Each structure stands twice: as C-alpha cells, then as structure tokens.
Image 1 (tube, rainbow, N blue to C red):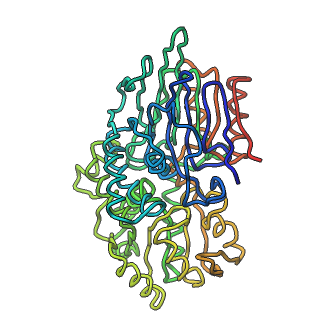
Image 2: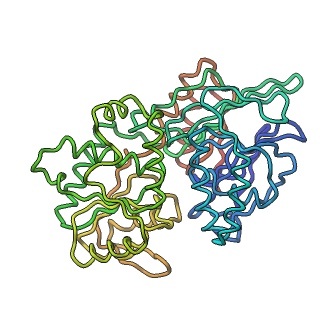
Image 3: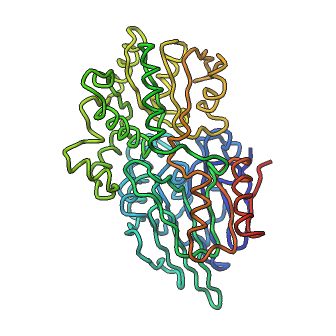
Length: 466
C-alpha cells in the first residue's frame, strides 16, 4: 500500500498514520524551516511504496528540514535515518543521552539489513550519523541550531531506556505554540523504568494510540500470568519461545523472570530452568541497560543494592555466535529441552526467532508466548491469529504448520493503555486545544478519540486508513 501523507495545521505525517510503524512527523515552523520528529521504518502490511520493506526511500522534500528529533531508538522510529542521510540530510539529530549511546548500534543493524553489508560503507554511514547526533539531558530546554524561536525539551516516556516524549516550543513572529509529540509512552509500573509524567501544558498534542482501545492488567497480575503460562508450557518438556524486541521488552522480561526465580522455593521447577537469550543485539543492549542503571526506577535500584542482578542471573545463558544458535535449535528439536528462549524480532519479522519458529512450530511440545503488539501483515500476527486454530504460517516462503501452543499476554506491553493515554491528557495543567491521534490501528484510534471527545470536545483529529 502507498503510505498517505496527512496534513494538519503545521504538521505533515510521513508515517504511523494507517498503523503503528514508520513514525515520522514533520513540524513546519515557516515556509523555509521545519523539523522532523522520528524517521522510522515500516513493517508488515504497513510497508511504504512498491519497493518493499527493505527499501524505505525518503519520498518527501528535505530542503526545509533543519533538524531531526528522535524520541527513542526502536526501529519503527529510527529505521529510515540511514536513508535520510543517503538523501543528503546533514542537520543535527537531537536525542536523549541514553538514546545517543544506543542509536548507532540500532542503525548499524538497519544499514546491514537494508542498505549494504560492505564494512567500509557501513562505517561511512555511521561516521556521518555519529557526527550529527546531539545528546540532550532530560528536562532541559535546548535551542535548535540555526532556528530562532524554536526550542525542545525531552521528558521521560518510560517506554525503553532513553525514551522520551518531546515538547517543542515555537515563538515565530506573533505566533506562540507548544507542541508535544508523545513518541511511544510507557505503561506505569513497568519494570526498570520510571513511569512518564504529563507535561505542564500542550497546545497541540500528537499522541500514539497503539492500545487506545484496551486496558492492561496490573503488574502483579501479569507477573502471575507469566508464571502460570510458563509453568503450564514447561509440562510439555519443550521450549517456550518468546519473540521480543532487543531493546526494552527483552530486559523487562529478564527482570520479571529473575524476580519469579528469586521468589521460588529451592525445589521449584524455576530453579533448574534455563533461560536462553539468543540475540547478539539484545545482549549488547542488556549490557547497556546494566551500565545505565542510574536511569532505573527505585525498585530496580533497590534490588541492585541487595546484590541482586536482575539482568545477569545464574539461570541466564546468552548465545552469541551463529554456530551456537544453530546448535541450540538442533538440540531442542531433537532432544526436547524445557527452557525459555527469548529472541528477536518482537513481531517475528526477522532475526533469530524465525529459525526457532521454523524448526519448532510443528512440534507439539513447543509453546509460543507473545508479550507485545503484533502488527498486521507480520508473521507474528499470523501465528497469533491462526496458531490456536491449528493453522499455518509462511516463513521464508515455506509453509510451516503450527502444532505448538500459542499464548498472548497482553498485559506485557511497553505501551501505555487507554487509561494511561487519557490520564496523560487529564493530568496536564493546561490541556491541548488540538489533539492528533497517530500510531494505531483504526479501532484503537477511534476508541481513544471517543475518550478524548468526552474530555475536550471537538478538538480531536483522527485519520482512518483506507
């Protein structure tokens, strides 16, 4: 499908309009000055244009773009940055200090997957990108280079390490306006990260709606559900496969699993359980999470003070090499091995999880546990939808029958739910006069819009996909 370009006063959307990927929002300050907020890749059915998912060219004018502001480093928010650079973009890339540290790692992987594996070219891209990155501390106003009357402030979003929503203050001639771009907001009581707090005010709010039609279960309940589902799955003496994004979801899962193990008795099955982290990128990001523990919430810091290691515990085994990866799959397939395997990608649209699924979905001892959103058109959505019916999925153009158990724990999401998204607006001292709802399926956007209509009246815009 061709991704539509939708316009509102001062704002053009280059993605995350018909769905939940490809976030890219252009804020026009004047006819000659604009900024981009995020520049992400499309996934699944939301692939833009005819070139396919691996050719996300920049198809909009860059001549007036004077800065890129990045809310966080998930691929659906940053994946088109290499293409932006390839199109000639050489302006500053503003992001939080933690995102500045993580972003080159994410983009190196994106370049290798989507542009080139030539080491010299990859390093050339990264050298340019690193030179453009401007790290910014949370809660500090920063004037954008070369743009009079435009300043930004990053506020913690609680989604992944370094994630932020961004306030953009514009004073241009007699025009004064405060824009807030939500990026992806995290849910309260998410492991490791503090919950987001609402801004003091917003005139225009551009907000995500991934779970705009749903409410998550509480932290205590979802941990109990995780424990119960895994224990039921382990009775099959097979593997529990958990597709998870390398940044955020993986670390939260490890944190929760370590907590379950620490609370279990010495004879409990959890004590002898092997937890396999099979994702080199996820392992790298987990190390960064540990190194940046100063950004953790109070609960996580308290565990460290008691010599607990939520992201590096005894039952955790990390697979690095491709040979080890293939060997693990072969062993589990032949022998059967009660274990938890966490591997990317979270929507089963690539990465090492695909080899596990291809080998183990036909095995009745296997269980697949989804803990995050599965976009339309991704293998993850197909497995989630057709697996419980005994259906099949295509992986590398091969039909794979699904005999594995398939479970979904919707409470484990790095995204705010409907209640949280409504509270984000309710708790502003001065509420928006205009809300633009993006980054959600039609049902989610409409449901959230209804909540905002009740709160604000006719100040809500939502674009429905066609």
